[in-house]
View (cartoon, rainbow, N blue to C red):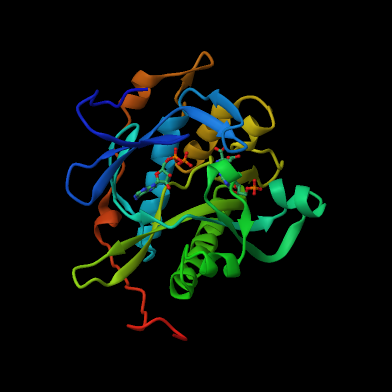
Length: 289
Ligand code: ADP
Ligand code: AIR
Ligand code: ASP
């Protein structure tokens, strides 16, 4: 699917759910949100009309909120209904998963009943490598293979807990349970070569499990993974409860109304401008050497 600006900009990367274009200023990128959906790291493929618009909007909103509580994110501003400008970072090849309620691969792997409330959040790490189906790894793998060092990992875990606390509250307030989610972080170097760890990629129903608090109904990408049907309706419900789209929604006669989506107001980027970055404090020489 082409960008709003046609072929004029350079595609740097095309992933499963997004296209990454060169940004409008140095050090920036444009994330274009596609309607393509995959699961099992590409094993199952599909198209969810309207998903890209909704994910762009939801992720921009959540990143802006997180920035507002002091979590450094890559988000700079939304450009149009499918695109956002972000800071370019060096992606750390790890997926950090947090689980509040048992679901998905945790249930499969350990035989835990889906829906079991976990007494404390579980944090897991996966190596981001499609060819290997993103295998689960631990700190030893991460340090040994140099994907991140202890200072970077500590920073990522700290930020991840903050994101979890904040998002649990945000979603509880709109009648949703945050079952689990996945985060990606990246490195950014400052003027004096100081290192910042920044939340990157997206936070959307593609990488969060969200259940209705009362009925337990699944509203996220599990509708696609498990062939539950009405996938975009689930995403729309989440966006609507977050107050991001008109009351009537963006679907008419069962189809996604691109015209209506185009007319949506731009999101308020006010908070995103007030950004504070905090460098990761590392000794000048690696520990123990
Ligand atoms: P995938 O690569 O898993 O198929 P996507 O289709 O979502 O995923 O592609 C987006 C890609 O862009 C991901 O690989 C993600 O790690 C990367 N990315 C996200 N945010 C940034 C950023 N700020 N700077 C550089 N790369 C990013
Ligand atoms: N996730 C992990 N890899 C890709 C994604 N999107 C997200 C899922 C789910 C959480 O991480 O969307 O919210 C845990 O996934 P799983 O499959 O390990 O149970
Ligand atoms: N993100 C992975 C994929 O797109 C895994 C998943 O979402 O199930 O295939």
